[in-house]
Image (cartoon, rainbow, N blue to C red):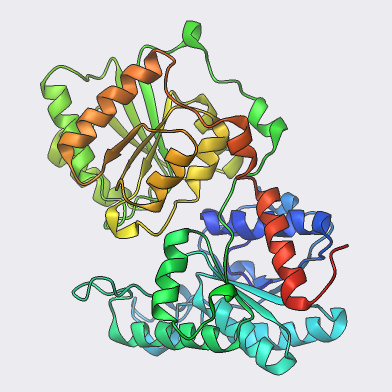
Length: 417
């Protein structure tokens, strides 16, 4: 398993996907061998999730330099050192280490996950040298050409590099895994030469850790705080989760007397773009309604979700083929959930499938206001829809690991144990 996002990196939902597979695959008859960068590669580190790796996973960490932090002079570095990403140096140490692991452990298959693109380059090289079947996990799209005026990645050199990697994945991988139906459809449009049966859907999920989730019971109606606490936990990307329509709605609702500092608070936790958001909060005059809070360990983040009166999901229409990983944890916490997204996207479809209809259009301040008022009324009355236990069970990382184990059995021609 070649993965950049792995403990001791702090932050990022990609950690939870790989870590969940590493934890649960042994119960499915597969022994995980993880190849990840050394701690030096990570600007933010923490030890909280190291204990979750468990004794079953073998982990090898190799040197990876961040071009922006380790190779820059005066804040500048040659762009070639950051293709396909800032950790391209990881390839130099990881390929020899991976070959040693292959000789020592004789694995049945290779698996790598994007982002970071260098992980795919490492797995691609190991596949070419070993002949092992390779599963390419595309938890985010490497390319997006749906809008010719705003392609992703926007830089031409990087776009060409990503396109080349994607074509190599098409040529050399045994299977391509995506996390949403929309992502599979987009890959099929771009990679028409790939047989349809090589694409597989394995969504993100939640950790069904009952002990951690029951340690703090959310307050009931008799203990409800007077100030409704709405929480957004995680990164807010300027283009993919732009909250300006929501901020405009909050400003208008306060002006109209519907919201004030005594009955409402929005907490934005670990946004990754606090400076930008602080400027917007000042622009709309809602600094007293919205607070920006720093990153915290994953366990503490879960406890905060459990204690909130409501959880907020943001996802713009340009990400209709993606589902934020936090959506699954939100579902597991069984707290009232307000989604501001596009009604035609995969996020809205997933929520409707789980019985949740408290959804508004992120692009419209008027619809944000309408959806928020309806949500607050339902949540305060205890009538906000929640996912059923059966629906939640289907979204667990244990279930996702069983799906990956079945795919590993298939590509390696192993019989399930």
